[in-house]
Image (cartoon, rainbow, N blue to C red; front, side):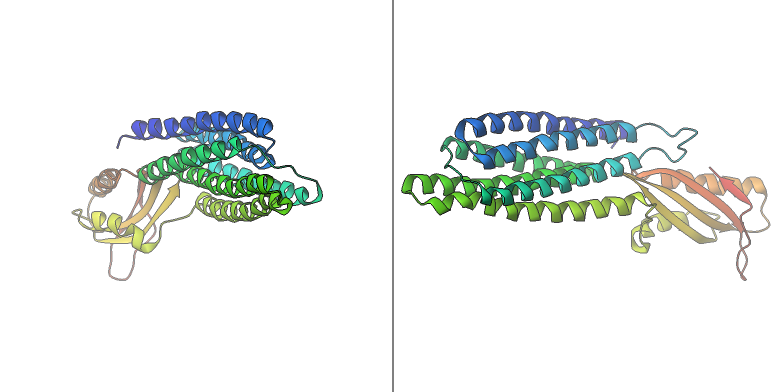
Length: 307
């Protein structure tokens, strides 16, 4: 897949999230006020926070597609992971806010909401589940941390809306049957969902931070790269290979050993061929090759670097 096509798909998905969350937030807020549903209003605030999350993803994707420059020779791929961290932090804050407002509801008298709030929540669940599946599948396809984290943010909304559905449904039934204690099913469900949201935010934020800190692929994940290098004529040995993750792509640093008595030009040619072959992989952004003289007792330090 062409890199420009990748960014167009990712940016479109981010904008789908922005527009979808704005529509849902306005819809749930308006119906929540009309139906006197605290749970639906809180769910609307959750959707509104997702607008900021989707915008952060969009800005991160725009920054990530910028070409390498003098200050950023390895490109801007980590902007996606940074955007993912921002979304995770927002998700954590929303989780705490949902938990706080749900707990405080126990100390105030509540009235049963109108039944129309149930229809609004069901609609929100359907839309959010579709958005999750769309962004998750696309994020996996494009290897985008930001899209995957944003997809799970939509999934957390499904849980939040489902808990709101239980709470609102219980409150509506309690209002019809004059069972006052059912009204408090809403804040109980809210606290439960808040814990799920906080747990998910912690997990996703931890993973994104890990990817931002110059994480290198594990040995088994670089075997394909090593296989490509070993098949190139003139490469006697791979002394070292590190594939560093930069958002959706990787930067490869490797040291190869060549015959010690060949010319510098021949060693340079071998290094260029190694780089060319590795760059054919769709997720490799750049390759830095260091040439060492091969001998049976070990290799000396680098003599030539191919960039």
